[in-house]
Length: 275
Image (cartoon, rainbow, N blue to C red; front, side):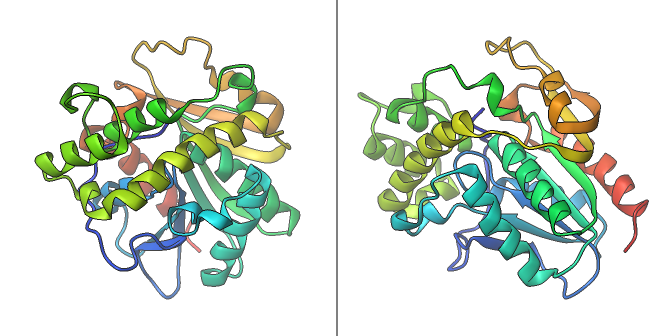
């Protein structure tokens, strides 16, 4: 559920902006990618090489990364914010939305709002993202779970940490690995941990509305401990789901081989729907 992956994204002064231009274009088609549970959208940079050069790609990122006081109270509040961000650069559709893990839940809520505003949504892509109903009765992850998720974001696991799992120990491990996330510093890494826990809780509390449209779904199809997850759970909230299985685990969906499959299909879908 965490939506985590290794990333080599560069750290710049704008890298934590709520709306992050992964590839900016002043006009024309655009794909808006909603962050997974950790709040960063850097993981989507690997899609760029697979999508047509004329397609702008933007990431939506959690406000809590830079402003703890702006942590949203609900998925609905987050979706309202992201709709404003999206319409600031593309005032009108057609819109293309993508989300991995909890990002898919948020992207679905964004699609509902855009349709409510009378705007067309051409494409909704859910990357191994399951409705909150399927998580609702499970315990919310604690800080240790979030730290493990942070390690997964860096392509590592708990074995690289010497001693007790803590933000400081994880940061030390990332520095030893030369990972880009280490450049964020302890305060931002602590904020990511908080964002992970917040998003897990908000997803469990979220009540979906129906989006009267289709979704393109990618399933991480290798066996997983979360056997209860089932894309059929979207049936009350979507008109139709078209699925593509990927030979990977959930944390591996942003790796180059999986992104090549996702990106190739997205490129063909985007080309079929020119603005």
